Image: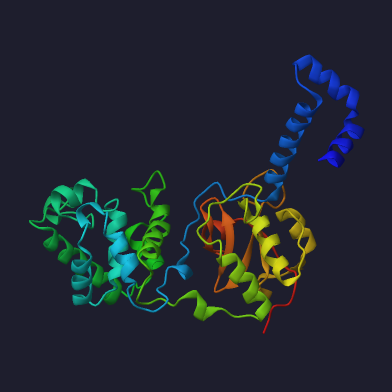
Length: 347
């Protein structure tokens, strides 16, 4: 602190600070405190930013069951306080398996469509899927006599999409249930369908069908795995502007700097300086462990960074938290600035 105060005093002039402090009724150290606060804010702004939009596409690699089976603890917890669905976990499993579909996927969609079992459609009409009545020209919601009847109809409808039409992933189902840019979605709410369904699936313990856990897909050498495992300690943490260690939390570049340091790689502090530090590579040269840089705001040439993990995904800290995201498509794909390599992590 003393060294920083001396530096500020030399640059600005201690007499000037004292004069300002006297005018405002503040001590020299109070003025220094204000300047320090401003410096912290500036560092946070340059350090990296999440996007101003919710990215399209969920963190699907982390929404898979590790065992391939339903995680009973997570499943039961999800159904312990779920409006009309409270205590109905076994019914979801029975009806989903009867139709040959993933109970977790079916439940995650129902939770999203009904606001976790609290919407008027499910509470008063036993309609868990927002199913419209063809007898009314698709203008009104269908009414079912019981929740089981409504769930049976919804599961059969999902079966047609998942098995008959081959739409087996959350992303592919989202393109039908909530297409981006649809004329009947003027406020862009459909963009939240995939991320929210993915979030519910993760909360329930992860998908049990048509999905592989991230751990089985990791490629790269031990150094890369060390970096990723360090980042995974903070998965689900909130984004913290200016954060660069576990005590503070992390912004995008802070997470990179902290995690790469675990294998002796000393990255600069901000997304832009990391962009300048890394060796430029092309998209077709990308391998796990490389960095992808983005411009998601206007205050700097590069404002966000994530680590590429393969399969078009990255791990990063953005406005929605520390998580996996689609890196090359959707929102993030549209704001890529470039790609960089700080070490060769190939096996």
